[in-house]
Image (cartoon, rainbow, N blue to C red; front, side, top):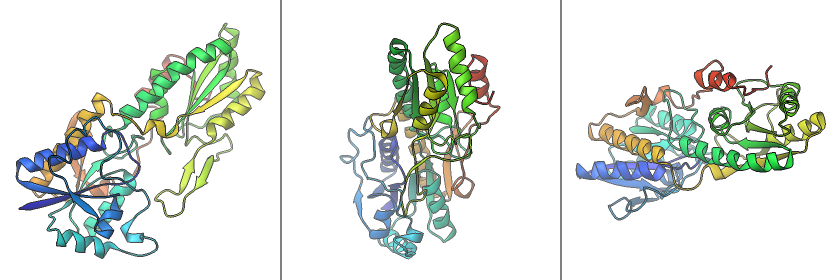
Length: 352
C-alpha cells in the first residue's frame, strides 16, 4: 500500500483540520494510507505518529487548532542544538512514506525546502493567519482572524462612543499588516497603523482631534503588533529561545494609547486580541479554502509531484516550488487597492 505522511508546523490556525480531513479523504479514495506526525517536526524527528483513518478525521471540519498538535520551535536541522535530519529520513523510510505533506507558514516551509534539497520529498500547504506568505493570494486562517477582529471592533465602537474614549485594538500579523488593514476597513476604524507605513503620533492625534471638532469625541484605532514606533523600534513582549522567530511582539497598542491620551486629553484604552484570533471554529471561507488546499496537495502526492507548495493565485489553486515560498514574506502593498480604499473613505495611516 502507498503511504504519505503529514504534519502541521508553526502556530495553529483555524482550518488546519479541514486540510487534514480533505487530504486524507482524497488519498484514501486512491487507497493511499496517511500517517500523521504529532507536534510538527518534533514528531518526525522522534518518530511519533498515528495512522489517520476515517474515524480519526470524523467531525473535525468545524474544529479549530489541529488534531495532530503543532510546534514552532523544533527545526530538525537545529533540534536542541543538533542536526537530526537523518532521523527524519530514517523514520520516513521505516514507514515507507513516499512524501510528507507539511502544512505550515514561511518558517515550516523553509525547513521543508531544506529537506527537499537534501533528498526528502515534501509537499507544502500554506498556513498562517497573518496572510503574509509569498506566492499565494490568501492563506487559510486569515479570514477567521479578520472576522474575529472585526467583531471586536464592532463591540468597541459602542463603549468608545458611550465614554467618549479613544479605543486602540492591537491585532496579530507579525511583520505584515494584513489583519489590521482588513479588519480596520471592515470594522470602521478611524486610523490603522501597520508595519509597512511609518506613522507619527502627531498625525494620529490630528485625526482624533479632527473627529472631536466634528462632534465625534471618540475614535477607533487598529494597530498591527509589528508596527514600529515613530523612532523605528519594534515593541517586543518577550524573547523565546529556539523558536524560528524568537521575538514575541506585543505592547505597541499600549504605547499608542498612552501617548495619544497625553496628546489629546481623551481617555484612551487598549484591547489586545492575542490568541483569540487563532482559536475557535474556522469561517466557511477558510473551511472551503483549506479543503481546496488539502485536495490539491493530495493530487500532487497521487501524481508523485514533490517539492511543490499549493497556492491560490487569481482565484485558482495551483502550485509553485517550495524554494520560492519558504522563508519569504508578502507585505501589504502600501499603494495597493486595500490601502487606497481605506484612505478614500478617510481612514488615517498616521503618515499625513
